[in-house]
Image 1 (spheres, rainbow, N blue to C red):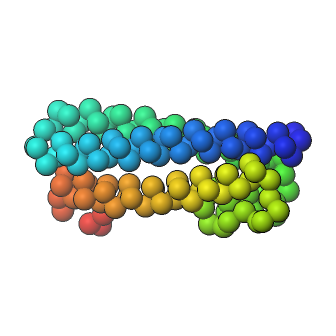
Image 2: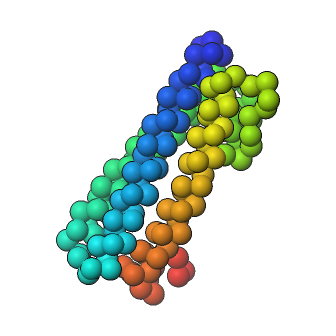
Image 3: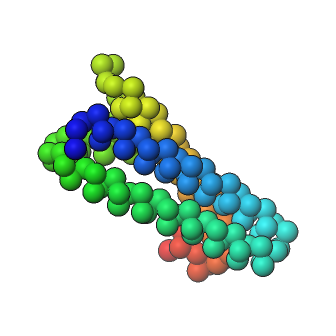
Length: 134
């Protein structure tokens, strides 16, 4: 796979991941709202919807790792750090690489927000048996 094609495909995957993360965040907020209204039926339905988005994220991650099999280990580590929002793209990087870095940062921040909100939701749902209390 040519380098430009790789970056284009990675960008497509990251845009899909960004959409799934945003949707998971939106659904997690709705779960919190349903719990505050003590609406268990809506909560269960929303948990299923969120799981679908998390499954999309897992599938996307698998596709990304498959794409990265064509690059050497050192380059793979750098690309993964960019995808995870752990590093910025260099100044001379391509448009796609810079955009991937931006999306990676946005995804990382949204995942942190989801984790914070999920902690609250989990404690409300499971109480002392919450994953976060262990």
